[in-house]
Length: 621
Image (cartoon, rainbow, N blue to C red; front, side):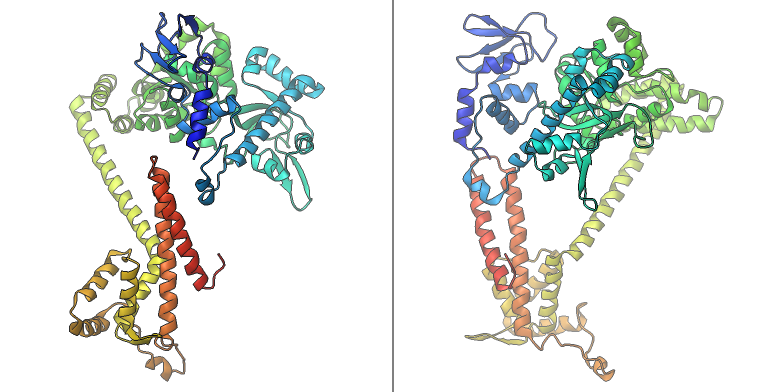
């Protein structure tokens, strides 16, 4: 999407030692720079940056490349995100390929508006926290005295405060020139049509900005200071938007990602304050699912940085349930999992305040278990001296083991289960095979159901409906003469002519088979073929005479056959071309090389044809 000239300008202007120096400490070493690897825990610097060649090399991990590859490796940006990051850093305006603008609406400017609003909101809430009487009394007092956060960590996570006023943020934002339409999109302002009024979504709450991987604010979490009827929810989040999708983000990942890479481990907690408390205590490779149930998207986000997860949830019943629910999800994504077992009433926040950093790490090491030992601790009292309950528990363990794709790990977990549960391994293997068979049958059943749904969608698809009508016309009226300006033809020959001229094939195989069957007949046999199929085909219409006897007039399709066949073929061609355009757009997006220009020209060509067809159908383009 970005022109080659712009990309070359970005790469030529970018100073590699300046950019990398923002992420790791570099020291001059001759003509190069040297630093500790950000990808391993080395003690002797082996990370080299060459300003002359504009490349970097990490000898401890074997990684290396240019400034773009560094941002992709270290910050996990995409190629395009890396270019945007550098362009913004050096104030380079992004120029897009002009041909792209004709086909696709570039929503970058729209997103930038929302990012700007979120950034303004962040600064507004910070100002409210530190420089207003209400903010200092309610927000700052809560964070420092009740939560025990220091000023350094408050600044690190850019915490703020939303005042009790109904519209202070929105009013100030409008004064700054932001549009009400954009404020509504941002999820920070609610507009009521019936009263022609607006008000802030967050009021009298401590504000937790939520950042994306590049550090931009994409939404907020707000915690109420005191319980009341008007603020019955302890936490509320920004509403879903193009930028903010709760199921696909992790709170604290922006602040934690470098430490996760260094430690090759991620602690996963439930709440915002858990992340900040652990971070303040020295455990900085920690993220939160922001108070929602763990999702596959969130697990895969962690997997971009490490395959090792430690679940660190509250010790109460809801925390234990959340841990148990997350086990299979994490194992299915080929992750290495440990779970912390803590007492009821304890949580990451309270434990982080209880111990020093060395004691905390020692506590975590002693209290973290694999999923078999964790489940055994949870369920052992429930199935004690009850063989039936114990058998259900064993099946629960085996169901989790079945989610592990690595055969060696699966074998070792079976050995672990055999030792802990005091059950022969052969028995466990036999039961595991039964579970695997059931799972395969479920997958097959799901696929069949999915196939059935797809078939039903096909039946409802306008393109397929017209195909059915065309086949119906061929079988019922294929030999009917229709008058043209220069010559007469038949229904079948007219359809055949259009399909050959436009190089069209029926989308449904059964329709193409019928069509091929008719085409394969010799000219003298075509009439017989059509008549014989007309007698037995499923599309045959009931005799119209029986309706006439009842005094009901039914329009015969033959009455206006000429116009009917023309309109039907026009509609079919327009739908067929639309289908081809969608296919080419998909090819264009998937293709990353120079062939994209070819696809673009093809899309434009097909769009022009579609517009002409729509005009013939008397539609507005």
